[in-house]
Image (cartoon, rainbow, N blue to C red; front, side, top):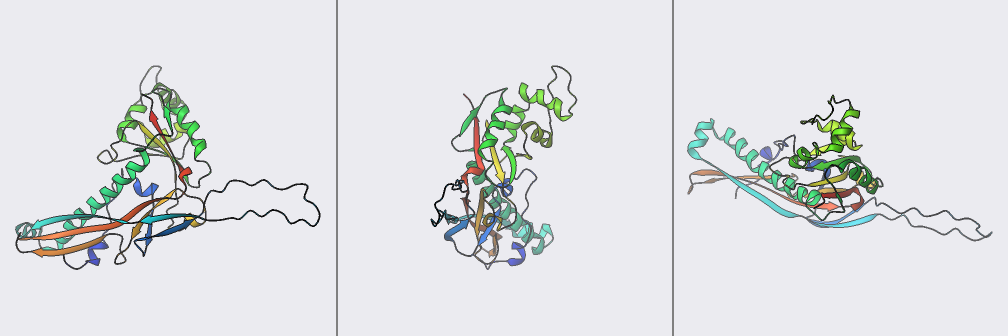
Length: 287
C-alpha cells in the first residue's frame, strides 16, 4: 500500500449525533500496542481504629492503583474510487477527501459496534419488567454510584421507543412538565425529558444501524473526556488506541493501475479497557 497521508489523517472523524461510544469509552492514545494501564481504583472503605494502646503504631492501609492489561487489535477498511469517477469529482484532491472519509467512517462504525456489544450485549446484572422500568433503573443506579462520572442510561432506539409507552414512564412524564391528558400515550419524548424520568443526568440513544441490541438498558457512569482523568478519579474505561504514526486513524492511498482506480485504506489499532467495572450495570427485559 502507499505511504501514510497525514493530511488526510487530520480530517475530522465524522461522529453522527447518534454515535455515543466515544462518550462511554473516551480515547486514550498510547505509544505501545500492548501494555498495562494504571488507573485510580475504587477502594473499599477501611474503618478507623479506636482504643489503640499507647506506643502502638496505627494499622496502615496501602492505597494502590488498579492495573489493566490491553492489547490493541487492527480494524481496517479499503475504499476504491475509479479513475473516471475521480474526473467527475473534479480532481484527485476531492477524491482523496471522499475516499479517506468513507474509509474512516467504516472504521469508526466498527469501534462503535464493539462498544455497543460491551455495553448492552452482555449478560444482564438484573432484569426489568414491562410497565415497571423506572423503578428498576432507579434501583440499579445504586450499583454505579461509587464510580466517578456523569450518570447516564444507554439503550437502542427500538428499546427507547418501546419503554416510552410503558405506563410507569407515561405517568412520570406528567411530573416533568409534559402535557398529557388522562389515558393519552405521549410519543416522541426528548431524551432530555427521559433523563428526568429516570433520575439521571443523560439519556443516550445509540445509532439504529449500529446499536441493534434491543430490550436492554445500561446504567453507565460516563468518564470525563480529559485523556488522563482516570488517574485522578475512579472512572469506567477507555478506548485504548495505538498510534502507529502519531495519528488515531492511519490513512494510506495507492494508485491501482490494474483496477484503474485509487485505493484508500484506513486502519486503527484499539482495545476497550474496562478499568472500574462498577461504572456499568445492565438491565434486560424479563422474559
